[in-house]
Length: 300
Image (tube, rainbow, N blue to C red; front, side):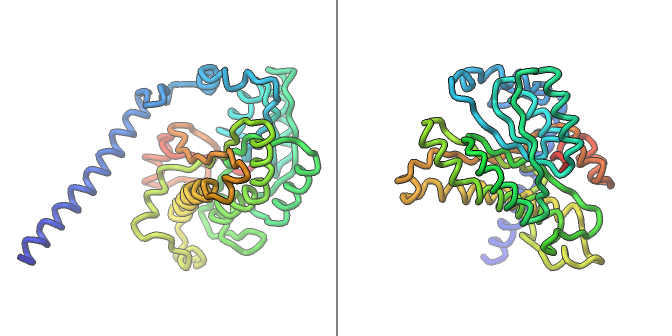
């Protein structure tokens, strides 16, 4: 009887593993061939097409305000472009202010009426995050949308200002702290305007690579055992878990009394070739990341 149970368990795990891998392969081909998903969009869809289909969301007389991290390249820049084009006030936090200025010029060339605010922010520094949030709140602007898009991949062990591993510190800890400092403003704006607030964490399906062993921090702090892909996967898993936990907290009775009309979403962006691929080269990443299946924009 015990042998039979072991055999059943063994084959069940093989089936489960193969099913997940088959699902992944099918998803990859859907991305590559532009097959539309449940949303009605596929990898061949443009940002303008997506925004156009939700044009009613921008038909309010109230000017929406969005903060987009990593808006100086890749997904972040494109998101800033299309939202600004639709009349959204876009706050662009950036470490490289010169690069941010160049992006602003490109957006204004296409949309002269766009309202863009550039502010300095280094997500690998807690003090910089606190300073950015303090300065933003002093502007007394509403905040409807927070898009935690910026990301970092390190081939070798690097540390943040507070001595955390750079990839995890930037991708997760930095965005966690940013969201924590701005959450009250998001809730207040949603309550005052009766417009649902949005927090969006840009993640990646590569988070699945971290679920086998769970979070492994000791190896990430050892230069000899450091694995950049594992570090990146763990940071993306943490982003996903952050979204799930924050959703649960916003649904709690305490925050519902404050009319916390804010939703939290995590998203894998699909096939988009962005700056992070320059930092992420190897056999596996050459096949998958180089094929644009996994992506995230680079911290400006």
